[in-house]
Length: 241
Image (cartoon, rainbow, N blue to C red):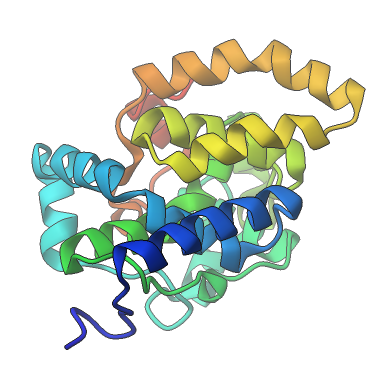
């Protein structure tokens, strides 16, 4: 009997084959999101337990685990977010999604985590990943952004190109311990052109310090902070990039 909708049972041998195969496929093509997802699920049990423990130790984290909110176009009113002031988390989030033509609905459902609670932790991680892109950096200066109001153009902290993904993966790896994040964080720089690789190396100490100092990103109830100013959220959770 499945532990949750979509769950697939495997033997230890099958899990090992999936883990190794998906890891190699992810290294060959980092944009194979299906293989990245399988790798994360088949290798991440210990890290997911750690993440759940961190959430249970935090008031907001416990609330998230209890409510099990989902981030999708059916649960989030994107038109409402477009009407928020331009310096808010919600408005900047929807503008980032529009700019890069991405949707939260594209996140793969969890299938290979053999615990329903840990499966939700993994699903939540995938669905809040885009907020890390948005928050890990500086936006347009507050006064200008306020003046532009809802017409402000989103300037995410980390773009969705390879350099941005590597920066985000280092932050997530250090905060979560997920092997899949470390794999991407270590292999990604090898695919960067030399100029961008030098930029990454120069920025890595700041990314690492931020990951260590910042609040655990899984303990942020993003849906309840949409109308907060984005720079206030950054300061509150101690992101100073």
